[in-house]
Image (tube, rainbow, N blue to C red; front, side):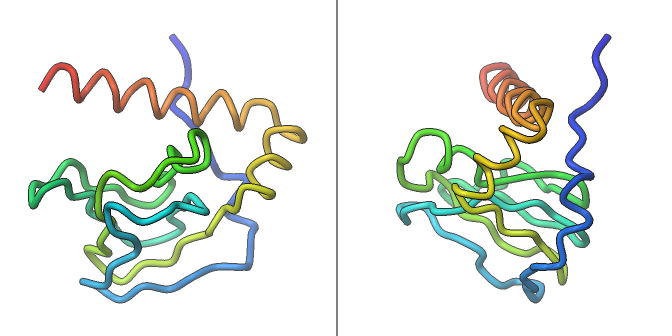
Length: 120
């Protein structure tokens, strides 16, 4: 059995963004230029007004935009006050090169979310 995805390497990143509860982080249809790692707080991912998932500290979101260069398909709203690390494409590529397990963890998150969507 494999370990759950671990993105703790991003905890040491001091370049963070703060979002107040209820604040929009990104909206569906936008071009995505970064993914996010939640250092603290919770974020709701909403599609067509329906809550898909609530993510907390230690989770990532918005990663698909860095992988396929497509627009955002859902909205990300801060459920609580939160602190996130924005991971640009350049930083993402650096993390993958320097820490290969980072890429594997991103793939595990994508696979898990795909499985959950196909079984709901």
